[in-house]
Length: 293
Image (cartoon, rainbow, N blue to C red):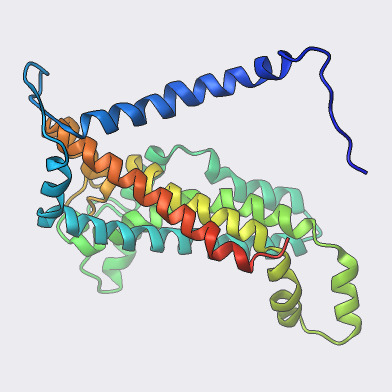
């Protein structure tokens, strides 16, 4: 039986929602509106000359080879980060769920990276893989790997991907562990009585029941890869070498803050927002059909 909540005053629900609505308006809706407005303008760095140009900023972007390369680079980056952040998190959650002794210690240890700021995580990975003083860079050189992400674009992209994914593993681990603990043990016990192996139970019982959590994390991690990895890239490579790690969100920063091309930067932010909205819509439209609630 559903219970309905009744407020003694009709205005009370609006007061309760007001703080969140104000935050959303000030920090999300208003900046998005400003970006959309500035994307159809051409202005100098000081705003002394402003001219309406319509969609010229958008058409110029798709004639720019650097921007198209950045789009493909971002697609590769986001898929890699999402995969590397979710798969190990699921494995760790399954292993932690089976631990009996010192379970709290293991779970707490695995959550600690989530408390680290993305920029700090980037600096940590950059230090560990620094060709001059990094311990892991020394190990790679001992294995015969010519490691220098400051000069090799592929190595720089690989390092940024692993740093960004490592930062997100703890977040995914929390949700996967909560999902595993909500699965009725009676189902797993019944499968064991029927002779099902651990692998069979995982693929036929655990994973389908985890599909709502997996779908939620898929959306969250894609958004994270597109937006929240800016500080990781900025701290580690600055988009280099030779723009090898310049993903879309960092190109917005380079063109807007460094090059002071405000019209192009605003157009890029609008396109980036539309891409993320489209990906989220596709995920809800098609991927959610396979989710078992």
